[in-house]
Image (cartoon, rainbow, N blue to C red; front, side, top):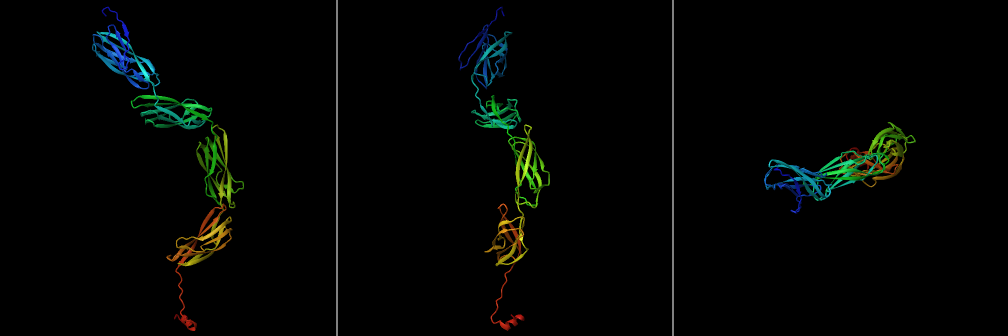
Length: 501
């Protein structure tokens, strides 16, 4: 010390060196000066601030140990917080870069960090505390845009909404992480809370399905879910953006139950059949649903199985199939036979609900055409053959506009007279008809089939047809031998008797 009192005399000067601000401190005869470069920072990014230590004294400095400390929230030293040098020779300097991270929410302005350190000079330990000033000159510009669609959900239901993350920056983003959370105790997130996409190019977007459950007691109004997205730019800077995504709850929908008959084919009197019904739900969910079948009032239907079936729980858009076995009376007339289906259920409020639907069973008459008697037709090849028979209807009702015709299949050829219009036909009332047809010359001899098509209108005036098959025997045409002149009279008779002709 040499009896001299030491003072720490700060000397602050500002100089424009390549647009930077410099700060210098001295102790006694100035032997250590601290200056900084690259002090202008941008919010949301990492930046390097250069710290330079100059030994302006006449003696070497040893065991130099410095720490850069920030007391400002949002302004952090993330690299080279502490720096150690073994020696700084007289009139020489050393420099190093300390990496600072400026939070994206830090407002523009001037901030101060503290450089604390110690060193040895002539065997004496000296401590030093130097303020380091930095300036945030660029505010953070958001790089992503968060939206939600649809923005309405139903109270008492689980709804799926899409959270869209869009890159609105000019550069690509990587390691994009989305986190969602409920902002209200009345709303809950039912599926995962975290989503990720490895890369999001400039101008592109990614959507994530979030399932939001609103309690049934949720009042109608505006709510929100909190979304935070983390991402990195091409330089490795990590960013975070938060948004409150608006949601609106609307009134809880009421359940709508519909019943559809899946059996399209008609039934006939005397049939035992199974009816399949589809119970569909829309609007809101139902629970513990049961379906009961009420048969027709005329007693034409009889159950061959239970008339109550369990449907179970149905969410909106779901359906279930149930089956009932029935027997139709043999005297049932043709037409539409209505039956009633009653579905009882419990809604989301715990109240009992009932839905009633009427479904119809199409009943069709028994119609069976045939011939009065079985017949075998013999036809000569290349010749026109006339076929006569009686058409017989075995059934439960009258048919209209009946027509019978020869089917030109295989060796059978249609000719004039191959079709005959009969008109109305009553059951058990034979109707005679006459049809003509020909057999192709190249047909092989022997058994074949002649097909007759019967067309008519049923009880619903819908066109119907049946085919009647008739046994056909194809033979060669018969050759007629002409009688020679002069063989008449008694001599011709004698020649024929003795086989001389």
